[in-house]
Length: 290
Image (tube, rainbow, N blue to C red; front, side, top):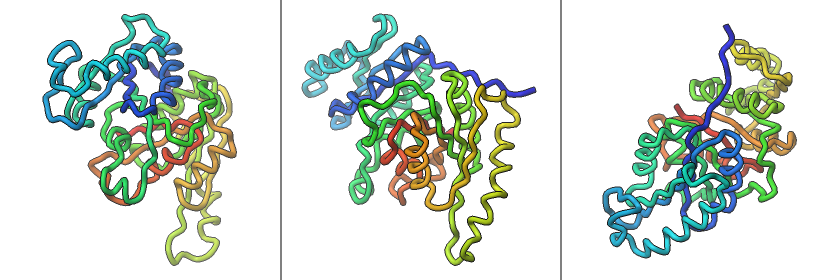
């Protein structure tokens, strides 16, 4: 029996650092909440003070400028077109990921929506990527709106690129790619990037291309067939570069990919493909690391 690919998004966690990234993420969170009738939990984490998590209705004096911060969050939440019963403001203090993890568990979060400044190089080595902390640890999918996503980007996911390296986290991401394709009646573009090996014979990666496409097709054989016939693309080169180029060429509205879980990846190591894709993609990136 083919696996069902219907997705449900009852609770959305929208994070904000109050630096303006919400201007990019808010329209996507709003569109998703309206489509799935979701409750939106808006979270800001104060990381410069070391206190236990504090609810917004008590002990706010511990936070510098807590009143002003809360008012700013109210203004942001006013951009969410939901009844008050479907909206919640959370102001917390502590380690960013630890707070996010607890909020995900306490509120049965189905999807995290967050922005990314796209920092790389020495800045990332020193500070790490806040977004990357989340999408490599989270037990739910994470939609990251990177710095290259235009304000006019389509909020309906009509063209979806699913990138796989055939590892377990990619298989988990496939379910969400197919679910999104079914929900939006979208065109799904399934891709794998063959990485040339150092010292390999010239032309060898290209010779592997026709051998990989059948494997791509078998990924979908145990699922309900998408309404539209998927497009299969086997590319050669750097995974992150090729995925971004494909998304641009196909006018993708969404990229879906697995992200190596934190247990197998160090934030302070070399830039992983997911991080680079998020930083350069012309559309949001949905990552799955569980």
